[in-house]
Image (cartoon, rainbow, N blue to C red; front, side, top):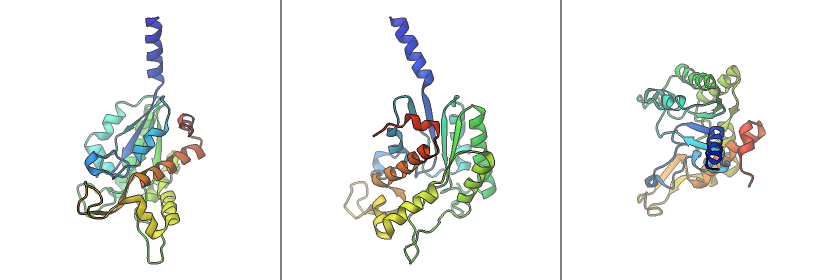
Length: 240
């Protein structure tokens, strides 16, 4: 009986799917000292059954360039196996010309994304490209502004070029913010008054990073896309 159980355990382990998340602070796991700031990859991880392991490798402040130069990508590539997934969302830091330590030119941004896709496929795993999630920026008329310039379109064009599933999180999160409106959309972000939370005694006004509600709303957009595009991973989403 013990041999049978051991074989069953090994079979289960081999059949497990790992979903790697690579990206920046809008996706990453936060330290307790940063709460209630929440990356959307945190609630995303709880929506799957026991056959799926979500391995969130996203990191604050990382661009495609620094994710590679710090060997963060190589550590993912070395562990990829057939049937795994890699969800790829960059742009916020790549586009930051004022931060030369992380800035990535559009040409290099596209090349780095191509590397992630091609090396994922070389391991018979499944790449998913994601446009950078929207910042909370509105014009005077209350219309959401595009804050990512040419980086969003680069992800879209590369997805078409390489025939990679695309989750257009930029457009969908812009629509979400527009639905909430200029004032109410603040409820989705790290917005705190002085003394409201012990981690931020002086308060915090952040229109890039989400709170728990915002992160969950963004995660639900990603999950809805997995279902709408019939990406096989949909079969492992727990039905609530």
